[in-house]
Picture 1 (cartoon, rainbow, N blue to C red):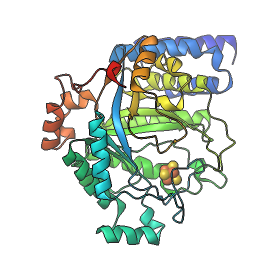
Picture 2 (cartoon, protein in one colour):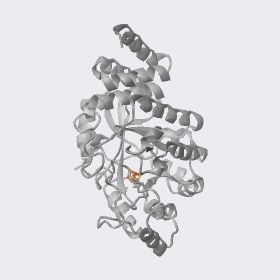
Picture 3 (cartoon, rainbow, N blue to C red):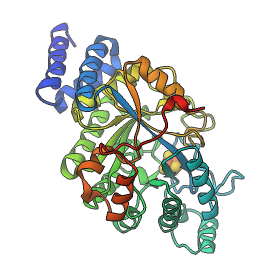
Picture 4 (tube, rainbow, N blue to C red):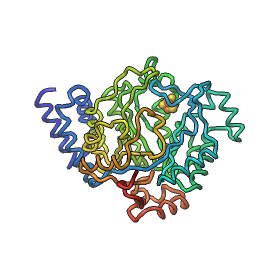
Amino acid sequence: MTALERDELLERIKKAVDAEPLDRESATKVAQHLEYAPHEILEPLMEAARELGIRGHGAEITVSRNIFIPLTNLCRNRCSYCTFAKGHKSPEVRNYLLDEVRSAVRDGLRAGCREALFCLGDKPEIAYRSYRDWLAKQGYSSTPAYLVDACRVAYEEGIYPHSNAGIMTPEELAELRRWNASMGLMLETTSARLRERGQAHYWAPDKDPARRIRMTRDAGELKIPFTSGILIGIGETPEERVETLFAIEALHREYGHIQEVIVQNFHPKPGTRMEHVPSPSDELMAGTVSLARLIFGPAQNLQAPPNLSPTSLELLARSGLNDWGGVSPVTIDFINPEAPWPELAELAVRTEAAGYRLRERLCVYPEYLRERPEFFDPEMLSRLRSDCDEDGYPTGRAFSQES
Ligand code: SF4
């Protein structure tokens, strides 16, 4: 890219703050630049995104205090970067009984948590007879059916479930909606190429982008406040990153249900096929968050997980995001067990050092509670609203009181 072309791109970035979101062609140029020469555009890009983020959300970054319940760590897929999913003969296989769900929720409630994140493997009953038998012994024929009851138990104990259980049918989503304040499925990537032999998703039929887009669309039709996101560093190209962000944006434009977009970095894990692939750089991460802000505009909630970038929180905070996602004072990140959560008090201090205030939210975002009642069953809405102030934020302890 010549100096003139770069200057034109910087002009277009500035225009995205006041006039119009970034178009696909300009976004692609930004993504290419971030990949090959990030320092040439990073600061002005972040400055524009930061300005836009503050217009949409003020100088605040939110966080949800949660517990993580991996209902089963079996999965029918085998993504090349995953250590969460265990083989069915592994001594580390863990399936939660409903009593264990109840007990985990009570631990979370004692620690002030409001969200139970049910994150689990995709329909392991398709791959493993032993798990099918275990499920049948509990009285269920599928993981989503079991998850419905686990969410009901959690909800009745007094916490808000947020389920991320892989690909499900519209009927399964509809059943879960009653007991979930919000739900999610990372799109990760629109690249069908990553399903080819030797690529990250070759052994993962549920990572077929078309299936993930289909389910995200179903969630929109069912009016479920929904989390999506992009995974950076699994072999995708800059152009494919842009495709992925625009695919999420198009789904949200159609249904208005994408309540947050996660920009998540790949983390290599020993023992996986991708253990020697490096993580994306801090600059690429911050730049991609900024790019997402310029594509989505000021209102969208943009999140990056703080435990996956512990040395660059301040950089990320300046990149236009407005949310750190779920952080647990009780449970580890079972997907990335090597990456401990920051203490909430420390996160508050570091967020403030970057010029923002840390604020607690529920797993569903305040604007849905204030303005989108059609996204909830009446009983769920009434309980959510009774736990929040008129702006849709929960009342609770200050983060400085965390131990
Ligand atoms: S990343 Fe998710 S879908 Fe892929 S193997 Fe792990 S648990 Fe299964």
